[in-house]
Length: 354
Image (cartoon, rainbow, N blue to C red; front, side, top):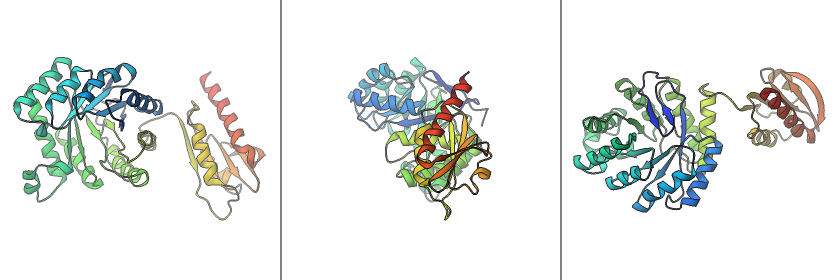
């Protein structure tokens, strides 16, 4: 992790300076529908979301932030485009951070007005630049949309705010081109110590978006770059949280929770391993335990392959094995495997709590 990054407080959370990477998402409800928005934020919070962003397309949405803030427990970021008055209103109605592109909200006087409002309440400003909105002069300078152009654009916007003597800044540079995005983050990490919000924008649907995000975020985070992340998916935002948690755990950047490992099916498999593994993943989500669970398709290799897991099950013909640390505990009918595994996990959770 880039421990030299500047610490920035967002609501009651702190990012940068070696603090844990926080997971962010964005609501897809109408922000002025306070009930629907707060309900979605609560579900996202329960799933593990730690910072939430809401679109503020009009003054009604900006005013709704105050009511939303009363009902949620995580920092609220207001997403602003074009209208500087919406940024000011969002700050006045309790946003913990605002996301703007200083280049598209008007002239220097309007940028100053937003910065003054943020300074008055010590609200961080996230400077967001996407490859799709790169300025024409930078496209011409670099002969196309490039990582270098994205970085220059972002730092130009940062300098606009710094010249107004404000440095509570978070930077976000995104592209749907995975390798361009990774290269841009590598370059900007060398040029600034501001915290970085990392993500692959417009990643796509659940399937394609998860693959692109895992590859892109994996490359970036492995280099110690990134202070908050979002997995951008076309779908239910809850899936963004699940994917972000899995990416952080896979990289060893987050501990805790039950990790489920399962083998690929083969010709020896005589149980519904795919369905069983999926049911196990769903079952363990509400069990407060830090361990590894193995779901194996056959009793031939199952015990050996599951040795590194704390507990596991392996299928047979109408029956299967319950194992701990690769050692067979007992044999059970196939229909009883899932419930037996759940009972064992609950007992382990109770012991861990004691």
